[in-house]
Length: 296
Length: 218
Image 1 (cartoon, rainbow over the protein chains, first blue to last red):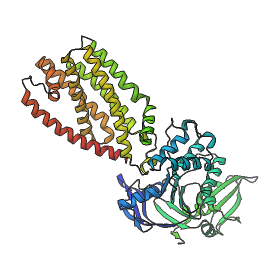
Image 2: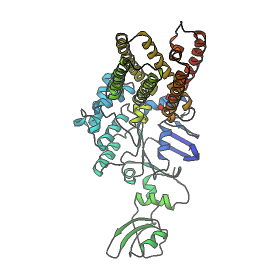
Image 3: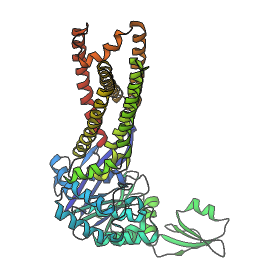
Image 4: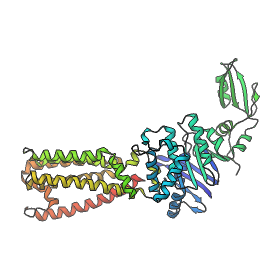
């Protein structure tokens, strides 16, 4: 399966730019869409999910143009989608909710019951399946959300900010779940949390203000920032000046004042080169990169 | 069948959909029992208020997914949201008709024929005005529908009050007769013309309403 996005632009009412001239090619992988809030991730996802129409540009899914109504119906049959903010029918139980979603997918009763039971087990909801969803925790709701997205055995799974608002344990649990179910399908994971992408994605695109800043693998992105991440100990007085001069990634209180991790080609202060990670590379791309970076 | 079963269940939990029509029915019977309620204007006001409440809770139930932030999930499923909407609408309509039937039986046993005709005539007039208000306001913004309906109903009520005061008892029959065909009424043919005109606006309003529904469902 392959998704080809060509020069996609979405402009909302009032001339607000959602995305601008986005071109991407996504193949069978866990694909991360990384970017700050308002970068255009959700807009791109909604266009892919046929929820909104682009202003211009095209999307081809297995060479079929998404503009065609027959392709839209085809997409619905192969798509699983978990939006960022979603609710549940509060008075239905977890089992009933999934069963009703199965009805909406036109799955016959026997197959539906089997599939629902299977997904309840995979998502670890067996013990709470007979409880009304209004009693579910945020983590349980997210897992139920991913279960409904998997009901039709989708070959394209899109999840929008699935771990935001989850506690660390639930976040790790959800990330692992995503990795387990990713086999044989394209999973598009939209997030602003670098850790999610680092642990789950083979390929990423970084978006900012509606444009793609980078499209590469996490490893290449990190390699690109090698020699540009530094650590230095600075006094409390010097910290504000430093923030003006360099993109600061983190500040940790230390004996001398602060241990600061920052980005620089060649720092003018005394600093030690640090081993870069994906977060450094992400910040570097957002703040430092002057040119678009595409390794594909 | 499962689609029907789940939608009955979902509507059942929307307690206001079940309770309000019944409450309004009981109130209606009480209002009609009360001999002092003779003016068309009072009836109109009462029914306008009832229609607004019923309209709001019906819209609430029909667009349940929107309220629960579930529409993005249900829209991309294979059964179209319009199909679900129609099933739910049919269920609400069925319930509404059942309540209305109960009301009609209660009225037959409790009041005279003139009042009954006046009541249902008023009801249809109110429904028409609601629809017309929706139709007008939808040109501005779908979210203004309720305000639009309220404005049209208030204006309608004002005009009717004035007419009743100026023209007297006859006016009580004029508006209901537009839609309930009083053959003995002296403005019979004029009513036919008005009815045709109203039907045309009804039709246009219906088309606009469907467009709005499709837009709201996404």
